[in-house]
Image (cartoon, rainbow, N blue to C red):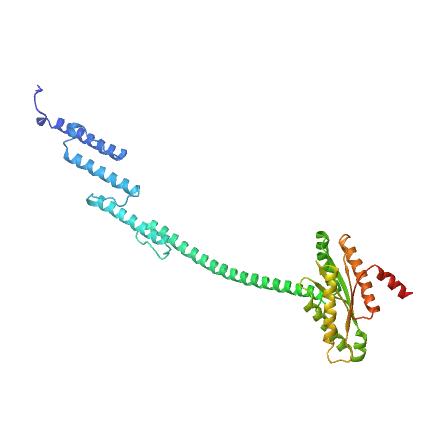
Length: 353
């Protein structure tokens, strides 16, 4: 008959069953710690099991080290011993080395390679090779772009210079088209274009403006006696006297043949007469052309421009009146200036009849 007070030590089967149950509980705790990723504390009856406690501590520390590596904390201390600790330290060291290599690549050192990390090394090395080739292509493209930029700058500079030269030439041609080639004064077209703006301004301001016509006396005799070269010299000399003795804002042009036309802005008729008389005496004193037996003189007529009329009509009328005054100077003995007055028309009509 079985004795209920008999100890478990005297019952091997019961002891084995207890040990198996304890082992199962320990394995379950270890399994839960691994699956949950955090430490599961053993029940009180297993808390004194040093092997189980040490194993759980080892698992907990290993999980913390793995978590640090997973989060990128590669400076955390790995205190585990044995194979697992060595493996974690190797992974940590390799990752730090990978980061260092990556930093060198990011700074432009595309010669970096990794040779001991398997597929990761292959991928890293392939990436670095691709970056090195890409940089080579970019440098070639940069060199080509720099050369292209320099070529474009040279082309732009050449075009700008050509355009400036063209504008200068156009301006020169425009000036030539409006300038008398012999005397350097404005030609008839240039004079008319120039004074339209000035007369229009005078008309708006109601300022006094005068127009004069000058004709060279004895010019035909100079040509017939001394030749056309002497005649050209006479025209140039008279033009020089005009330009030197007129004011900066006066305008002078060769009206045609041996006639010159002058605009005198902001000038009364009497002041214009005084200016032209002084020029007339200057030409007479210079004995133009020099060294010839026949010398030219000038006869001229001057009139006010009617600023109450239309600009073009006022200019045309002034030219007509100055011409009448100039021919009055011719009739009265030449080498003089005449101011236009209405009775000159009656005098000219009487002479014509």
